[in-house]
Image (tube, rainbow, N blue to C red; front, side, top):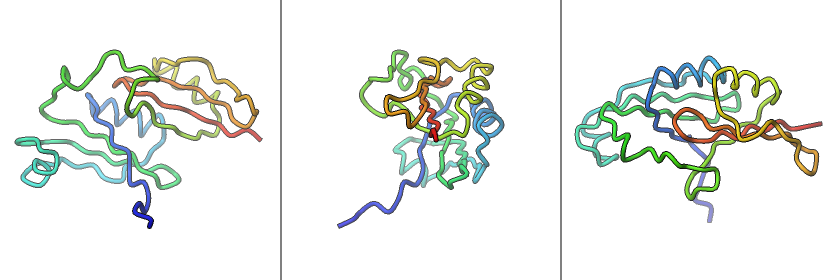
Length: 148
């Protein structure tokens, strides 16, 4: 019996909605699908957070997959952000994106002061070129270019 229809979106809690909006829209090229302030009984109940007030922005990629950014008005930064999250930490560690030109994306993100774990590297089977970077809110992106 199949119970999952598809992946709906990936949610990322961010500390600065404007910085994140600029990054996903203007640098990575995602399109805004929905941008709203969610507050009231429904969101407070489903998140079990009293007086919840959160700005959510859903972005859609060219393949129609979605990413949702969440920026809470009342932040628990000290509780939520672990300063020592590593690529081998338990839990969700990264989001993977297929890119057209990894070297170009690498240069663009380097100019934006994004930290990389290495330079782009061709896989052992020579099918892909891959690089990992850690973005500003302490999570990782894996960037993958499929080689011909």
